[in-house]
Length: 207
Image (cartoon, rainbow, N blue to C red; front, side, top):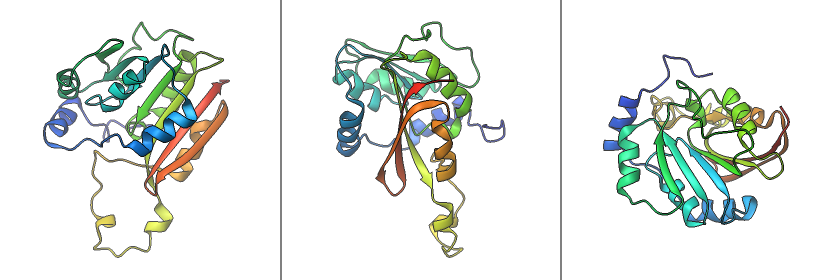
């Protein structure tokens, strides 16, 4: 659960999107996602914490009808400035702090994605909601997270980069936390994109 002290505000994220460098969607991620999730034209998707919309636009390019949600006005400004296309929309939503949008009805989605944002969210509660939104037969949840290899990093020298103050815009989940993400789902798959990046695919939420 994300505490108020650790929660970044919309103003924090606006500032970061004006000065930071959002992670690029790589060909490797696209290829592995496409092979495991098999997105098809006509699917309905939601991209949670979409940021400047790089991944949202990729989903639309595959022919999905997709809405990207974020609570940073600057991120959404950049997303819209990158160009809209058929089947692509963006909307503001504070996922932890506001009511669920009316469009997110039970069983209404084929795919929900969330890249890098789970460590900032009350993700156990969110995944319960996601499970309800997804079609019970074909619905898929996909997340990409940065991994905190705590044990492997313990031996690093105190003056290395690993021991510097963590970047609040690059929060991670431990391997143990990632293992809990499949609770209540019938099918769970994880795979690594690199030592520091893991993807999680969940299907068949059972509550």
